[in-house]
Length: 415
Picture (cartoon, rainbow, N blue to C red):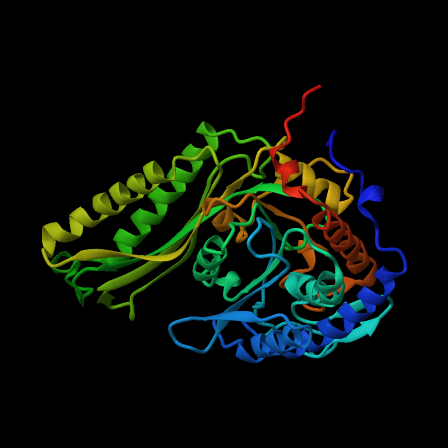
């Protein structure tokens, strides 16, 4: 990070950190109350955020989904005609049903320096911190804008992000950096795997099990496809080597297989769901062509008996991976802002960062909390973790108050 300001030079926030964390805890407690479960509505939470922004004179753009029941929100502070920084998060959470919570999951509980509740770590804690820093963002003499971008349905495969990312990319000046606040223990993440998920529906021909030769057994075809996908994944494990990822190769996973209705009936239909999590080295198009061949091969015996048999492939999830160079200026800046001493790393789970990067906005993942606490009962985030992230926002505010800060992104080490 030679050539970049040290964290102490950028500022650490001093006594303001405690006030911002206290405000963030109050906001987080309110956000947890909104039952923004993925796939469901989130407009109450969005309205709350928009009203909070409006208190500080910040207008927001609401981007609804086609159903009109959920939305993303985009707002800007500072001179929007200049390249700025995006602070990105999602408002949705995973369900809390059938989990053994010690306290109600959608009511915040505070104890032992922790805030418990669904979404506390993933990732309403980051949302709350962004909003808690709004007074300081607005009071600063920013020379470049801070953009706030909160999406929906990230937990369903980043389904709510594309329209929001497009709106961010279409701002008067395209941002030059995006920080996605997923829980990384404030470590900087520069890369992650991409993901495609498909549902395959096999339709054969039913009949009585006493005469199986007259039917076209869809379960047999689905089982053959599952076996073929397993072999494809094993082949990928042997052929690909992507250091920094765990596992170090693209993975092919069959998550569900259902078919048939009764033992004495030839199954007419079967449904299989699979996913591929791929590294930057993976030729995902080639892998998907191999999948098509596996399906065609399994379908052929059915069509030989029942010409009407078919296989239908449905796209469930499709988001790109992230691969920002370790030595890039964007990586160095986020490393400095975070205060982390650990080498920027990669992760195997996905985020919306890949979508922002694909839109031409260098993006990294860095936020408070631990992903190991996400999606489980008694999810929590510590006030000490919020304080660490609060200091990152203080440094960001100081950095964006400097004239010509964005020239740092063009920095090339001359020594």
